[in-house]
Structure formats: C-alpha cells, structure tokens
Image (cartoon, rainbow, N blue to C red; front, side, top):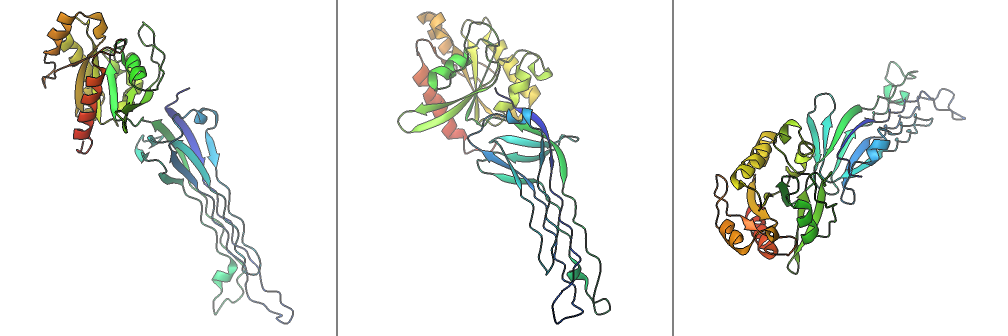
Length: 334
C-alpha cells in the first residue's frame, strides 16, 4: 500500500544525572569528590533509504523514544550514553513541524541523515564543583531533558519525468509499456489510485525515471478528484509530459485546464519544461495523425508527439524526445 503522509511523535532520551561520590581509599581518610558525569541521552535520527518507497510503517507506529543516559558512577566513572533511535524513511521525504507546517528538513538524497530530536546533556558529577573553599561538594547536576517533536512526514517521489493528464488519458498504459512498472489499467476513470514510478531503459546503457499520478480534473488544485492529493509527486521532476487523448474535441482547452491546475497548485510546477503528447494514436486513422502532428498547442506552441502504447507507434520518437529534453534541462536551475 502506498502511503505518502504520516504524523509521528519523537522524544530524545534524558541525560543521566551526575553522581555525588567521594574517594574511599584505605590510607586516605578524607577523600575528595569522585562523582562521575551522567551520560548523554540518545537522539532520534532520520535517515533516507533508497529501498523504501512508502510511509506505510508509520501508520502502525507513531511514537519513537530514544534511551536515557545512565547516571554517573563512583571513582569518576561517567555514565553510558543512551542508544540513538534511527528511523529510516524513503528518499524524497519532507519533514514539517506539525503546528506551523514549516518545512524543517528535506531528505532528498540516499543516505542523508538529520538529528530530529537531540538527546539531553548528562549532568556533571560533584567532582566538577570542588573549589578551594568547598573541597567536598555534596551536589551534582541533574541530566537535561531530551527534545520532543511532533512532525509531519510527507513523501514526494523523485523522478525525471512526470506524466500529467486527465483520467483515462493513457498514462498507466504508457508507463507499463516503457518500463517494468505494472500499474492497474482499465477503461474507466481513476484506475490509478496512487502514484507509480517506472525506470525506463533508454538504448543500451542509459535510463531515466517516470512518475505517473492519478488523473487531473478541472478543480484538482481545490481538492476535486484525486489529483490534488498527488500533485506534490511531480514537484521534483525535471520535466512534465502532458498526455492528451487524440480523440479529444479540443486539445487547446485540455492543455489549458492541465496547465492551470498545475499553476494554481504550485508556481514551481508551472515553470517546469512541458512536453505535449497525443496518446491513443491507434484510435485515429493516418490522415488524422498527419493532421494533428502539425498542430501547435499552448502558449509556447508545442508541437505534440503522437504515439500509441498499444501498437507502439511513436514510442521511440517519444523516448528520444524525452531523453533529449532531459539532457537539455537537467543541468539548468529551476
């Protein structure tokens, strides 16, 4: 099951208390202070891991607590530090403060680590407080409490190409044709209920990733349909591919609806490089295909790439154009 949102609570360990102790040696009747320091509390750490692709685990476990530090001992022995808790999350996970919704961290690279809640500092033993006027202090510091945080985990897929289109535009069929991804496919709207990620092998040695999200409908940015919930997953993509059904009665209007929904959801999405394609070419005759191939769609006069996932017509040309565009735009700042 794909889960891309979770709320969890984390608590770091308390630092161990410092010890009050004195030297007890056979021939030293009045030994000096010898209380050790308390150990630090364990911290809660988040780590991005490439083998994970969902936040499902956090549906069943929502509270995490690191161990407390041990108390200081006699003979200047310091207490042992509390064990850290390392929580692994998918690459692309964003951490937000639960109250303010402010983004705190972005784990966008495999192996990236952050200390989410820092363990409390151990208290100092009485050996640290001896002075010329107080050579036998009978007090020590208590350990400091660890940090507590309630946070939101929000997953955004990391892909090179994001597929955007209306329900039944053929996005799932395309991703199953050009990659090993096997999304559910059927002839009714909203077959895709969660994002799909596919790796496309291009020619002999190259590859790129494609993300397919549930179909966009007009009003998606306001929460209509399923698109609003998943539009975040194409915010990280380098380029966007619009899929418009070749049997549509108004390509220009379809393009405008898709573009405006992205723009209203996020200005960042609207600034991305967009390619336009006309899917389901197997439903059109040669004359129709020739006609639409010369169209110019959208304010930037996009010339559509016509293809069919069923017959494989235009698939090579589509992949060539995606690869060419990725190479052109992957190094440019957003």
